[in-house]
Length: 310
Length: 127
Image (cartoon, rainbow over the protein chains, first blue to last red):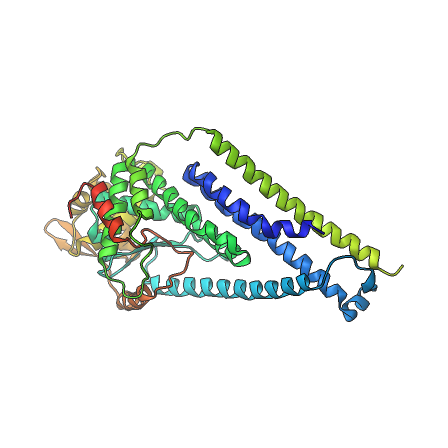
């Protein structure tokens, strides 16, 4: 019955490994590593919670009677982990629903806002404040790639070639469906608190991915760097009353890092010992947690079978 | 779609939709009617004027832009419907909301004072 605890504890070890590995990879594989780790760990942690709660459920006389079980024949320790697991699972389910509801409501509102009645992939909002984002199409309509939303304030802050870089960046977000990566990792963080540490690095890697796509589309890394930097300065100059400011000023945030990465020539990522070690360790963690979840499921199955009246 | 009509400029891989978006963005940025030649200068990337005229014609057919006669050429402005003004007002309140959803990938996040200084340094600007 130890196996059931492994998926609940392993995220604390695997998340730092995934973050370290992502730092050593280029943006696209790094994004896949971060989101894949989040989804795998969240799924197995959810399975573990479910198994724990289910074991407790079986001890209830009415449930045991329904399953033709003799509760006293069920193996396992004290009952309180099952109660805690059931409470956590209920809380997680409620939070998942709330997160999903909020995301859908936000998207729907953003869509109705951006619906200016004009067809085409670009929506321009007549607003002096500089802002731009990729608005994904509805999940139910996979053929709808979504649209780019940008304010006139942003367009006027940039030169023509810089605007091309901005549009290419947003188009890359839409083409690669980056919102699905973000949403999956958001849900994972609801299921296990340790997984919240994956959201910020994923956000950064997705922006880098789109930056590199824009640099390739425009064929000019310096131009793309300038576009990112000037757009950020324009957006920060525009006052946004209720937008909380990120990070204290002690160290540089994601935007200067993105600009610096674009200003350096692309270098092939070499395999280093550290990277290989992190990759191996992370793979081992993910394999271990999956095995443990399967093992725990088999355990419960055997346990139930043993307790059944014959 | 129109891969054959792409110019030889440095950006031959762009799709028709991407070119339309760039031309439309140039019109919005200008804030005044632009002729195909104006758009060409604004884009500044060696796109043929005939290509730009074709794109503008297509945007006009869709009702996305309006045109007026300016000398021998047409000058184009984005169509601003009442609905767009309405959308802008709604957007304003949307931008004011602090808790923008996490699934909207934003072009830029907020900057700290240190970020801003570092950025200007990287871009070679003096604050």
